Amino acid sequence: MEMIATITATSWEHGRFDVRRGPGKLLFGCVYEDASIELGAFPSGGRVFCIASAGCTAMKLAPHHEVVAVDLNPVQLAYAERRFAGGPRERGTAERVLAFARVLGPLAGWRPSRLRTFLELDDPTEQIIYWRRCLDTRRFRTAFDLLLSVPALRSIYAPSFLHFLPPNLGAFMRKRMERCFALHSNRTNPYARTLLLGEMSTDRPPPETEDIRLVHADAATFLEGEPAGSFDGVTLSNILDGASAAYEQRLFAAVKRVAAPGAVAVLRSFREPPFKLPTNHAAEDRAMLWGIVDVRPAIDL
Image (cartoon, rainbow, N blue to C red; front, side, top):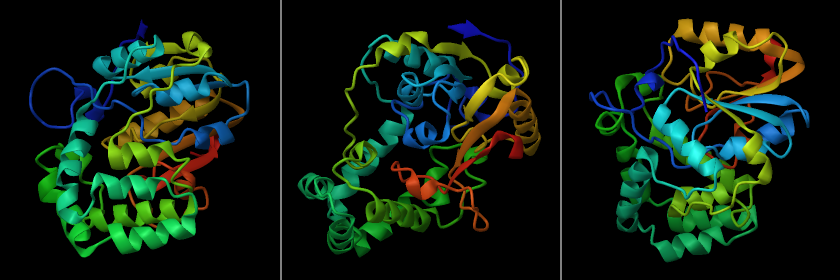
């Protein structure tokens, strides 16, 4: 693991979702991003940059690319390193929040047996019928919208992680879930099983994982120090959710500088797109959480 001095201006630098003082925490035990987006967008064999997070995306890219995985949170980075070495999955803050929501699920009719039946479906048409008849009930909509209301989220997240969200986030998230069930088979969607049941994959890391370069740094700072034209793909997760406009400009400038000819950038966000975005591939991301999965030539950022 490499360490690079960082100068940053994002909420991620604290290593916590809340505003309390204290050491950083493990935020993510798994990555809620469908790496098939990156696998389809990046040229095979190229050198690619990703946010390390829980290591899932880096491990999926490693058999096909030279991967550099960077993270600002040392706790998160150490976890990714353990994962790369074959260590077990651990639950971070995100998983504990989701687990709390699942405890309340049966009150809205979301019994585990019902969810397992739903997740065994393979036909999107049948899935939507089941979703609307058995899961997207009035009780669920009421409870879900309350859990994702700004007052409720303030008990967990710092204001910088909330200001960009639509005030009716629950309604948007339900639409994103339904969009996913209408397009993708539940049976072959590991992200649906993780989200609805909390079951995390036990897949072993591929042999190529040992070649991943793991770096403790801020994304912009790291990219500013890399040679020009040295990356064929850059995936930034949703690190701009919680970043300033000045940091966004700095990051985009760094990405464009290190982008090789034809390089592709992928950027996710919980934001709802303000207008129809031709480069938005959110519907293709089986993790179903995102309002924006922007896939475009890096030079166009």
